[in-house]
Each structure stands twice: as C-alpha cells, then as structure tokens.
Image (tube, rainbow, N blue to C red; front, side, top):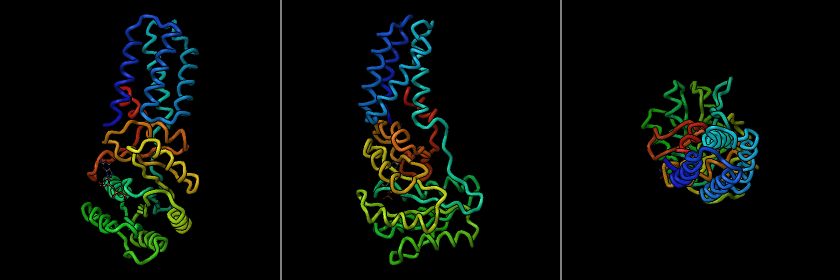
Length: 296
Ligand code: GDP
C-alpha cells in the first residue's frame, strides 16, 4: 500500500514526541511544523494542510497537552482523529435506489481506470447478491467495449452494448431500459474519457446524466497524479454534481495527496479505493482504516 514516505515522516515526528515525558508549547509547534512539511511533501493541497494544522493546534491547546501524563499520545490521537475527519469521517456507501435499478454513472479521464473499476464494482455487487448490468458507453476508445465484455464474461455479468455507432446517450438510455426488463438491480454505465477535461466530454456526460438520472455519479481518478486528481475532481464536480470519488492505483507509488485532499476540496466523499489491476482488488474506502495506515 501507498503513502510510505508520509508514514515514515510522521512516525519520525511522533517518535520524538512519544519519547518526551512533558511537552512544551514549542515541542508541539515544532512537531506541527514537521507534520505540515510531511503533508505538503505528500502533495496534500496547501489550504487543506493549513486548516488541518490549525485544527490540530487548536485541539492540542484545548486539551492542554502540555499538562498530560502522555502528551505525545494525546497529540497523535488528535492527529488521527483529524485525519479521519479530513477523509470524510465515516465510510460513504454506494447509493441504493428504493426504486431499482440503481443507476451508477462512471466519469473520469482516459486511463484513470474507469472500465476496470466498472468490472470491479460489478464483481463486488455480485458478491453481495446483486444483479448488475454493465453498459458499454465508451464508444470512442478503441477496444473499450471489448474490454468491458471480457470483464463481464469473466464474472458472468451481462454487458449491454449497441456497438460504437450509436450515441452514448441512447446506449445509456436503452441499457437502463434493458435492466428494468431483465430485473437487474444495478446498472453501471461506463463512459468515455479524454486525456484532459474538454467541453465535448462534459457535454456528452451531462446529456447522459439528463437521460438516465443516475442515483450515483462516481468520478474515477488516478491517485498517482496527486493534486492533479483533485483538480480533475473539482472541475467535474462543478459541472456534474458527483456523488462520490473512486481513487485508483493506490497500490502504486502514491504520495497520499489525493486521498487526503479530495473530500476537503470538493466536498465529495471517497467511496472506493482500487488497489491493483485484478478484478477483486477493490476496497470500500474507510477513512479510519486509511488514517491508521497513514500513521503506520
Ligand atoms: P479507463 O480509460 O479509465 O477506462 O482506464 P482502464 O480501466 O482501461 O485502466 C487503465 C489502465 O490502468 C489499465 O492498464 C488498468 O489495468 C490499470 N489500472 C486500473 N486500475 C488500477 C489500479 O487500481 N492499480 C493499478 N496498478 N492499475 C490499475
């Protein structure tokens, strides 16, 4: 798992604090300076870092850590709680419509891992006794339809496609219709991505959104791209009212910036973390577990 650099740095800071019987205000300030640098180096948004440090300091003063018998532990506990808050507090679950099917629209840039995630989510839903239908709405990337079909076949989940000559809006609409007719309780619509955000991409996905009124709009972002992932999330959210973010490639050499900034910057919770290329490498995103991993 990722975040090694950040974890090592935080462990150093907290190691020093733990070793001290009493903490002066200067000790706390020094430690916070180091935590601040560690977060910035992990590519966390600078405003997010500033607010985070301010909150931790305020709580440290409020709880008067300098008078505590285990001041280091108290500071670590405060940091842990604030990290959890920063990532959304509690686990944000996938939407479930009380009038099935639940329609999930996938958004994101090309290469972020959208198609892979669509397959992974189908597998996860299947393991929870749901009956998902996949809809191949990415008609532009060569082989995207085939990729989804191969994924679907591998887990025995049906894939709805109308080839690459019909508009994605129509494909999405008919896909949802088919799910209704065949009793699928989840419809996962894969959509096209571009290398960067462009107007045509936004316009098209907005039209799909209007046509199928999804219960869930998941933005898939590559966590390896750090702050860029957060910027992408912000732009998409401004145009498309996202309901959740999925971080992919958390198995890679990720510094942590995306995981720690996305919720604070966009207000949108992270719902899942993708940790590899295999179809079962998907986890629900738990802020508390992620905070423990970060703190090591
Ligand atoms: P799309 O263009 O957004 O549909 O992206 P794809 O689903 O085709 O994924 C792009 C590449 O990233 C593929 O080679 C995937 O195998 C890979 N990929 C997707 N998710 C992950 C992940 O969580 N970890 C790693 N290491 N690779 C991933």
